[in-house]
Image (cartoon, rainbow, N blue to C red; front, side, top):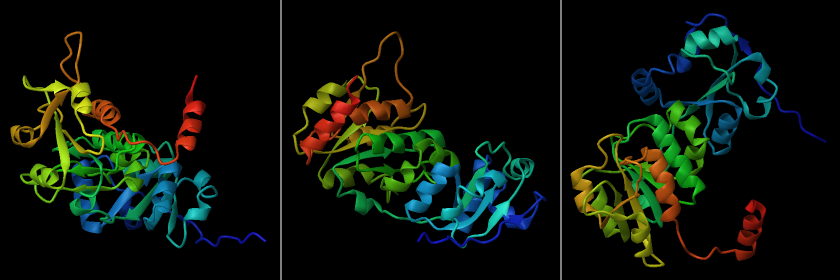
Length: 291
């Protein structure tokens, strides 16, 4: 016999300035949200799929702000958190944009991994001062999708748990280990001391092509690829501390790619080349993907 899930009755709210909706105020104001979310220990998930992935990953909901049409479909994940039922007009007034997915959840923020945890990995993407939330989210998604073990962020990188980063990552931020570097200046030496071959992705007259850097790696190499901030790229200090400087060859007068696109290419070229543990399953997957 199927057990009925008991959930709290939704609470109807019509006034945008109702204090119970404080978690959802001005979601597009990154400066305000950074202060609010850090102070209150929360983050916001947008859309049913992302909300489900956050809760499935163990993040505890504080509350939900839902349009009426989402009450039934999210019933099984609500638990005992309050559910605020609002009109689309109220949701837009509170959040500062048209919430076209109609579903927002506020969840308790957690620090799940440290730099020390990530030093045991084999493949790391390492971000230096990447401040665009969309780029951070895309890098997390690329790293997860290409089989990398985690992402290490310099202290000044954008917040992976900011709504736009979560949305761009398609929830990869909840499943892929990530952490802040303990210290910007010692991050690269610490990676090298932990056995990583550190490859800086940068425009430099001394850079080798990315394919050549990959070919030179030992079969059992641990690899950390450094990705620099939008515009300026990697700092001179990180470039000089790396083992290898590599670049993606460009054509047609274009000197570089967006950092998220570059992370996807580097992630594929530098992926772990070990034989899969289950070659039969791997062959089956390759067959499914064949045209």
